[in-house]
Length: 65
Image 1: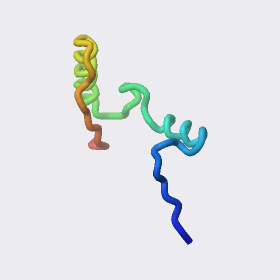
Image 2 (image 1 turned 90 degrees about the vertical axis):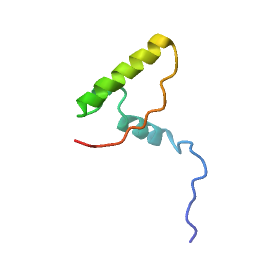
Image 3 (image 1 turned 180 degrees about the horizontal axis):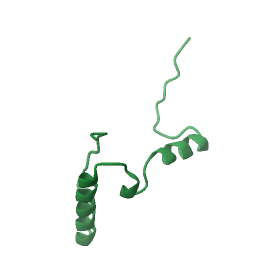
Image 4 (image 1 turned 60 degrees about the vertical axis):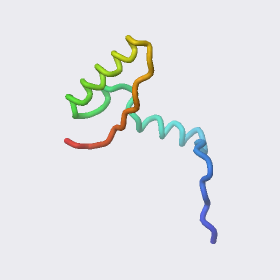
């Protein structure tokens, strides 16, 4: 039996899209822990908005707490 290969990053169904969105925090306040990192990110985001520039690339990795 052949394995089904996913060759596209498109969401397969609306239910999967809703599930994907519900797993990801929409704001920094929804992240749990790592208060110092969240504060620093808020500063970086505010500075980028004030400069009317895009935020530099950021890699989030966790949990560390």
